Amino acid sequence: MSTTLERNTPVSPPPPEKNEHRQRKWYEYYGYSTDHKVIGIQYLVTAFILYFIGGALAEVMRTELATPDPDFIQPEFYNQAMTMHGSIMLFLWIIPAGAGFANYLIPLMIGAEDMAFPRLNGVAFWIIPPGGIFFLSSFFLESGTAQAGWTSYPPLSLISGTWGDEIWILSVFLF
Image (tube, rainbow, N blue to C red; front, side, top):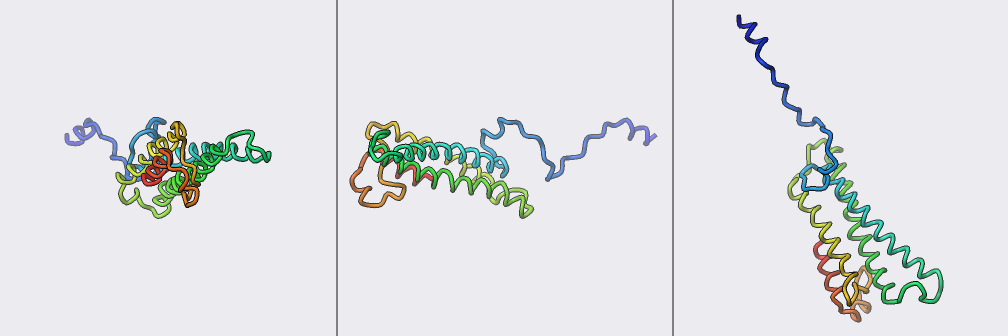
């Protein structure tokens, strides 16, 4: 009789293994996550978007340098584009792309389930998009964005002193 009872009881599926992978929905990549792969992809997508913005600024500068006269953009905007291009490529492309590859690949390479502090890792990514928006918003200020180069060394940093410089410094501090 015990065998009949055992056959009629529903058997629950075994619990999923720790390393079992599931198919993600596309919208899961647009929110907060503690999964190292999702965070790595978020870093890489954001870095590539900002890479294209920095590349567009480089094309503006190269177009201006095609002729000796300042006929495409004004010299002040050239300095702004040069500053923003260098800053975007350093702070918003190289660093986030490196963090994206590291987040995605290192746990897989060492056989770990996740990064050391997954919640802190997730929060660290979500500083980049608001910082990038804040950074690029200085283009829309009346006084203009920073124009002291991506290093902001004197003498260029001494002559500007606009709100764009302040936003640039705060954005770099945030990154």
